[in-house]
Image (tube, rainbow, N blue to C red):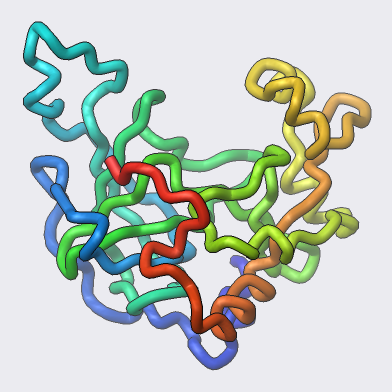
Length: 231
């Protein structure tokens, strides 16, 4: 179990409330301009399909995505924004279908950006990343390509550190065939290829990110460095 209490010592597991409303039956329409935003450490517990958007039934519209997705997540910590309940339901969209529940490379915990209207939650498209543990159980967001993480605030990439911890390197490595199949040539700058694995070079420690967020008073309302559509 990762040492989440060490992430923000003064905020020991804020997510102690009751679960939010039951899972959505349609995709929540939340105005990004008036929503509140959170960065949270969560574990995905369940997910499924929602009804396809009505516009996709039009003969003049070609939808490249499958139906939107609902998910249920256990909240381990809220790093930024109003605290979340211990369990929540949310929704998102993806070209690739349901989110990966767990990864043998990165474990189950993930950092996720959520936008909320107070009751309903939407994860902006692909705005999450798996976390890996170092030898002391601290969590790190492993940087899986050389591009900035768009759903983190500007400046967060300055917190990245080289991965020297052997346990973190082992927990974040991916098989070489996976790397060759799913990564573009430009991603080579973010990896060291050794033996049968590709090893990410950098990570952002969650403890460091939490402390940095606590000091910032100039963050944008939506937290994102490069906002994209939430759907």
